[in-house]
Image 1: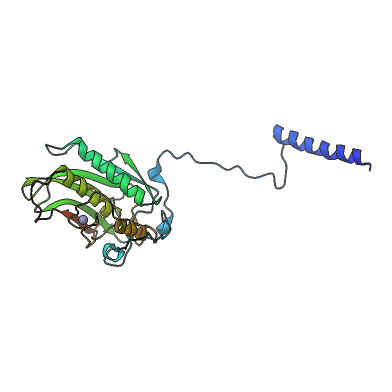
Image 2 (image 1 turned 180 degrees about the horizontal axis):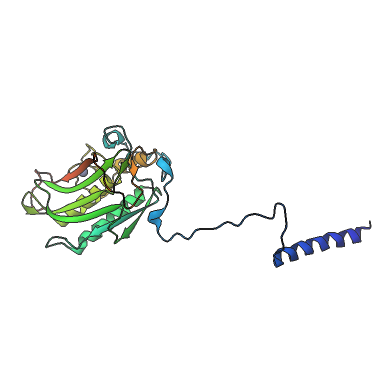
Length: 266
Ligand SMILES: [Zn+2]
């Protein structure tokens, strides 16, 4: 066959294939793939989780930091953490006590921003108004004694129900300063994310009587240590799941240091 006719033949075949695709004719073989459907997901809260390793991040080492992971594992051994990529947060301001201030909501958003950054992509927070949020926050007059904040986890088997966070406006008979409410709010987020205990270092945000507003390198390293490991206890997936009998309540607090002088303003 002469080269010109061969070239024309190949060109003709290519044109026929292009026309075939354009007109939608059926072609057997490697071109004929089943259609893929991208589901439209308008509710990130319904994302299926990826199992115990979902949302995990690399186990990096932060220079100069020391993890206190052993102090925050449940019962000293179990990793309790979220395994979903979007963690929804709701603030219950309807029943907030008299004296509640909009700044308090700002502290929640500050906490979300700081803990999301420290999570290095393990999860993102989303503020919602739903009562079925992954983390629910409310404010109360008092939690008794020196307690400034409480986060409750209800655990059943290998799952925990959405943690419930309460922030006090009074402790030991006096109003918390804005700075105390701010520190308490950011501190309690650490518990909600899975810190089942405290640092013993007074400079860490997760010290029981924290006095800083930023996560220390140790706090960040401990969060990484938690979220780079497979979870032993993960969040309940079903929204309507009811707490069965035999549930275990794990309560984490933050406290006003009784030695602090008052008032403790900014
Ligand atoms: Zn605490």
